[in-house]
Image (cartoon, rainbow, N blue to C red; front, side):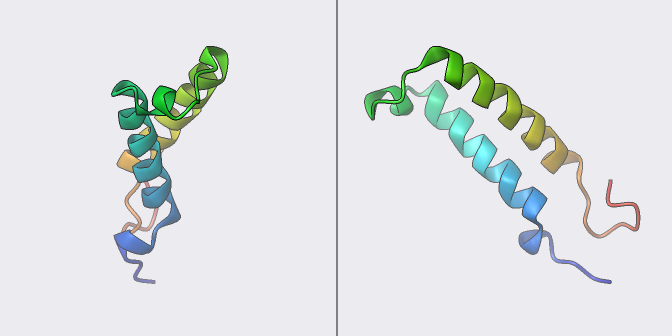
Length: 65
């Protein structure tokens, strides 16, 4: 089964995670009113883990990793 990388939900999850991390690091999230520090720490941890899985994923291989 051939699967395009651009159709992989893992790729899109990791890209959204990367986008969130970049927006948070540049302070854009705080400018729009998202400044709950504890909530951001939890989201950062989850998204870094998801981004890591997205980078390690290879949807064209048989094992998917």
